[in-house]
Length: 225
Image 1: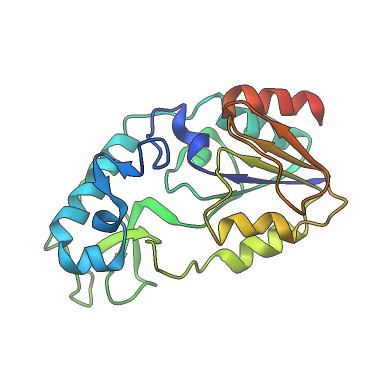
Image 2: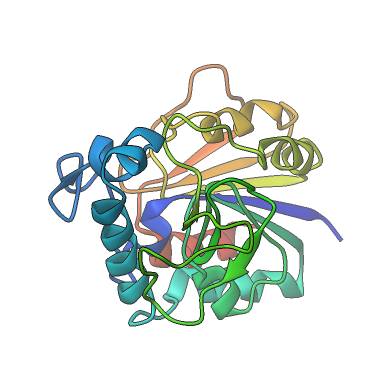
């Protein structure tokens, strides 16, 4: 069975109602990224950062997978589908995808502020200041913030290097290191880039552009492969 590797970004979940950073003038719910998604922001104002992620988590409990997520599950009938996502939502899993690697963490998980190996599932959408791990530190979102290392990039590179087909969906291809994954795919491998703003990528061969949203774009992909 051929290995179909899928890299998804914010546009994948936009049709479910989850707002994207790049479509809001560089703002998330009127917050600058520097104020809510960096280690410095957490150190400076943990209450603001915590509430921001509480609200994002609350929204996640209110939305459902869209047609694009479901179409990727359908492709598992014919392909070994391996999803690498930049998204922190769980919509791929809720749709039924079996193999999902989260590059930037998971919104429904929290972890110790002093030991990243101490991770826990959120029982609901709200985490409060004063909720501590067994080591006595505040629990923080299990999110890779801007300026932090991306620990899952090495496993993602390995998956990408073994692709028989690569599909990129709903990402601007400007956020690194995620955007670098396409360069680890063998040159002769067919690659499909699905996004309303998709563009040719310099140095990438066998790249097919599908300038559509995730739902209709994946439906078109199904007919092409």
